[in-house]
Amino acid sequence: MMLNFSAAAMISCLVLWLPLVAESKMAMKLPPSVDMRSNRVNVSIFLVDVNALNEPDGQIVVNALMKLWWRDPRWREAMVYSMDRHCNATGCSDQDRVYFEQSIDSSLSSCFGQSYEAFVSSAKDLGQSLSEFLTVDEYIWTPIPVHLLLKTSANPRGITEFDPIVAMTVPATSDFEALWVDNEKTSFDVTLSYEHFPFDTQVLELCIPFEYFTDPHFQTTLSAPSGSLFATDLSRISTMWDGTSMISPVASKRFIESLERKGFDVSSIVVQKVQRSLATSSICINISMTRRIGILLVRLFWPLSALLFIPFAGFFIPIDLVMPRVATGFLSFLSLQVFRTMAYAMIPQHTSSLLWMDVTMFCLTVILFASVLENVLVQFLRSAVSSRSAHFLDKISRISFPSVAVLVLAVLFIMGWAQIEVAWLMTTMACILCVWLVTCTLVMVTYLRWLHHWLMGVLIKQVSSRNFRYQKAVAMDQRELAILFRAFDSDGSGHVSAEKIIECMEARSLRFEHSADERRFKVRLKEVIRQTGTEALDLSAFCFHFTELFSYHQETPAREEVKAGEDEDYAREVTRKAV
Image (tube, rainbow, N blue to C red):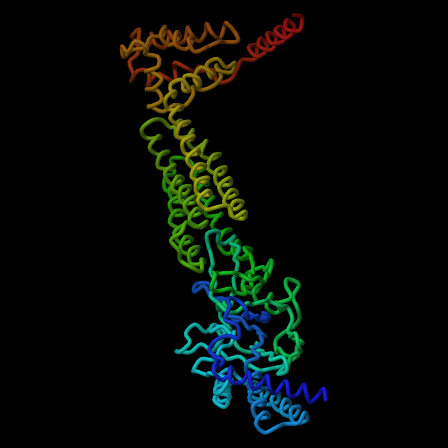
């Protein structure tokens, strides 16, 4: 009695419900729920291999196994409504209803277990047979993004070379699954940055966008909530999966090894849900990887560093060998252009942004150009100022150029490895080079400004030396002698006398250890000038008699002079200790 009442109640409810359904048919172009992100979709993605990494075009082509799971009960509900109407009109036993429900499940399974194109075709046919309950147009809703459908002229946004297999895996709960096998290629557009190349760390963002109505959730397995028609073991469903990598469960060992062969070390693979806007959300796999710099060091930076130091050898070549000195700097500067072309060819994408490579080439160009300019300045100083000033410039260049080159390379590599912002790197390197060039310029200008003092100091040091009597006069060229003459000619008369020379040298701390040496020097100086027949020398006479004025003819000390000098030194030492 209770069973009959229940059956009658159910039939009466269906009688009341079916007209309502018939009046408001379910539109299959819309999702089951039309609220924002109200239709849950489980997403599984497994990266199996890297087919290509096209850095110039910003694209990575992978072999990936993907699976989507969702529920759409409207197909089953429509068939149940149709069955109930039939039973309501003709009368059905409970056994008949069980049979009809089994037939519905079997029909749905056979209808939806096929490719996406066949799925759409069969869904339309099924919709026509259920037109009393469903409205089926050209478009049938699924949560499958258009990006994951076959790329055609009608679907230019597609990133795959094949359509998925779509199946209703559990008809009783209206579970649908879409499967993409990994034997075909899937392309993802990625954004790459080369500001710090070759120290760049790239983050490849492999994203699958979903529509307004879909709420995607990532899962790391192939299983479905109510069971699955497809195999859930990766090794059974994939032809290329060789095991889970140590980096991430969604990437195979083959995938990581493929990126390593392409010159990258993978540091992490993170899957996350990204809310792009209020209307869309995406499942993104972020692959962080660092470029392997070892091969670039061998191919580019080691030869480039060697090229940087070659011009410095010219600073040790005698100044009068003009061509070898100029060749070492100028040829290296020209060779830098070859390395510049090679370096920029290694950067996968051309960009107008400031790069680490730009800063490096700027620094090397400045240093090599400065080495060429140094050789020119040395020849100019030698011909226009003095040989001693040219030698002084060479002396400071032998120290400053290698030191600055090592400092510049160290800062470039350290800041590049630390991925400091390139603008700050450029500022730092410009400051280092400017300080270096300004410092060298100030040192050289100061030296030239006080060159007469340096020359006077050299002359006084030799004259006051104990062994002055046995040394030749200090070697100076005509320009240096002219500078000395002007220093002695304090009144600008154009002539220097012995008294002027002695007075000027004593004013600059001329001191002798032995009074006999002082007396002998002054007497000889006056005697040489007197032998010229004048009391004072002009510039030409000063230059002509310079060797006689500031040197003795005695080449080696006499034995008694050596003995007297030793006795005098011994007496001075005894006196010092006694005091």
